[in-house]
Image 1 (tube, one colour):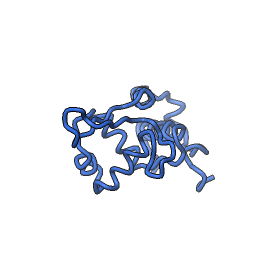
Image 2 (image 1 turned 60 degrees about the vertical axis):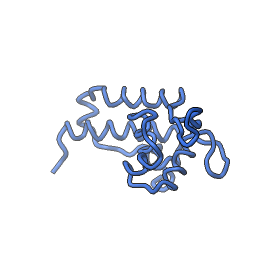
Image 3 (image 1 turned 120 degrees about the vertical axis):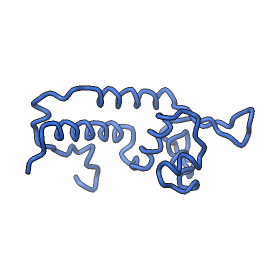
Image 4 (image 1 turned 30 degrees about the vertical axis):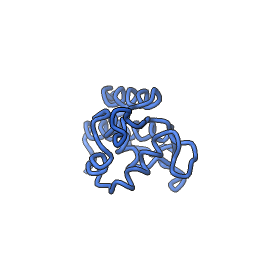
Length: 139
């Protein structure tokens, strides 16, 4: 059974979002993307444990994802620079996680993609996997 036009349109939007994420970094994992969107949706209100709990990650794993999304990853290599997480000056046990301008732009792009109506031609099209979305393992 072939997917309905609405299903194809929805899946094509998902593919466009995934392609946007791959433009940021081809090695970005789904877990890192999930962590990013949790922060984008909640602002600075969640602790490390709460972010991890939403994704089913233990705090140490969540910490690695947050590092990768920030300025430097755990190996001190440049991070994705999508979030900042400075220590709260009023409570040094707490970090305030915010989107960087680059992170805010990514959210705006994704919201734009999700808000667009997909034309009939795209909705009716088969679902090709672009080389960007496919990654090196599928190329």
